[in-house]
Image 1 (cartoon, one colour):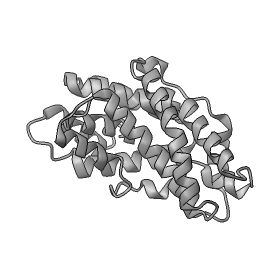
Image 2 (cartoon, helix red, strand yellow):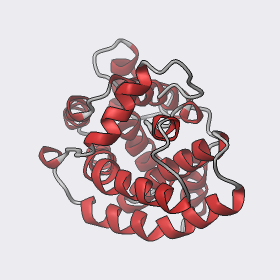
Image 3 (cartoon, rainbow, N blue to C red):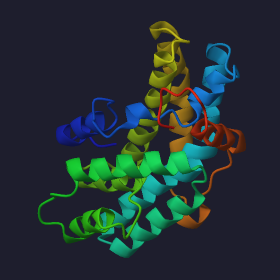
Image 4 (cartoon, rainbow, N blue to C red):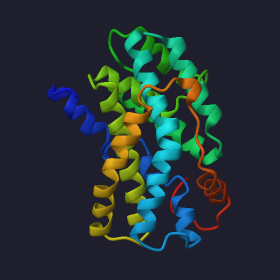
Length: 232
C-alpha cells in the first residue's frame, strides 16, 4: 500500500460522495427493493449490499478497475477500450449502463480530459466524448487512480468503498435507516470489501461477469416505477 500523501488524498477524493459525478442519483435497484418491501431491517440491507459486492462489484467492476489501471500504467489504449467494451457487454440493465457511463463521462471531464503529457489518456477522453467507447465509470476510475499514484489494490478498494457508501447513502435518503444503522452496516461491510477486492484483483477481463439476477430485475423494474427518487 502506498504511503504517498498525494495518492492517499486522491483516494479519499475519489471515494467521497462530494465528488460531483452524479453517483448520488444512483441506487442500482436498491430503491426498488425498498419500494417492494424486500428490505425490512439493517441485517437485510447488509446482506443485500454484501451480495452486490460478491456478485456484481467484485467479479465485474473490480475487474474493470484493476485492468484499466494496468492498461493505463502500460500506456495500452487498445487494452483500455477492450475493458470498456467488455464491461458494457456484461452490464445488462439499461439504467445501470446509463448511470455508469454518465458518471464516467463526468469523472473524465473533471480529472482526466485535461491530463498533461499523457497521450493515451487524452485519446481515451476524446473517444468517450465522441462516443467511440462507452466510458464506464470503473474504467475511467482505474485510469484516474493510476495517474494519481494509487496502486491497483488501492484503486479497487476506493472504488468498492465508494459503491458501498453510495448505496448506504441511498438507503438513508429513502428514509428507512438512520445514521447509526448505516455506520454499523459500513463497519460490517469493510471486511467484505477487502476480501472481494483481493479475490478479483488479478482477474483477466475475460473473467469479467456478474451474476446478480434479482438485482438486475429490480433495476429493470425501477425503469418503469411510477415513483422514483433515484435515476437507477
